[in-house]
Length: 246
Ligand code: OAD
Image (cartoon, rainbow, N blue to C red):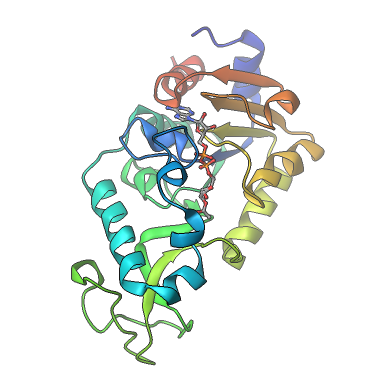
């Protein structure tokens, strides 16, 4: 893929970059996305049956096993060239903020630092009753059903954001600030359908940022983007970083 010269120039001149990623960036590692036909998680599982507090309360063991299945899947794969390219970009630009909607931790495994986990992390747990600093009574990853909270005895739950739940306040504030301050926004592997993450791009463009979308399919962000690179992030991102480093 030829990276447009004007895009390379904008990337080279950028002082403060925000990268927003979605499940598409982990697809080439073998982690299913959410909405892709046939393979997407939400194509095969009903999110309202698996990713809501109500669903958890109605059958904690089922939900726990489903997240354990996802944890084991992620633990068995490796970051791909797209993850590594973002980590490399972080090392060659003045300032980069990485906001991910992914809960797989693959960016951190690829070497990215200070990743803003907008939707939480699969490998984290917290007390369903929100006891501060709660620890599970037994090792979470071995349990067949949700472990109990060491403080209140209630359920421990996966540390991810479920439908109908708020984004962790610190992540929300940090991402908004980064969107406001960035001069270039790189949206990678997301359908740009889930809010409030889907609003970060607009916030950045209102502040004058250049918008670059790297995605396999068109999204609601495509038409507003200054540059669109259509294809696989694992193939495009290394070339994009090479364009300003080689
Ligand atoms: P989606 O499944 O909605 O979108 C994934 C996007 O990645 C699609 O637009 C694909 O075209 C694109 N894609 C797939 N493979 C790709 C590749 N190799 N390279 C580049 N792009 C690729 O997933 P998300 O946008 O991440 O939230 O979904 C957002 C949120 O919805 C998730 O974080 C999750 C889900 O419900 C919660 O659970 C709170």
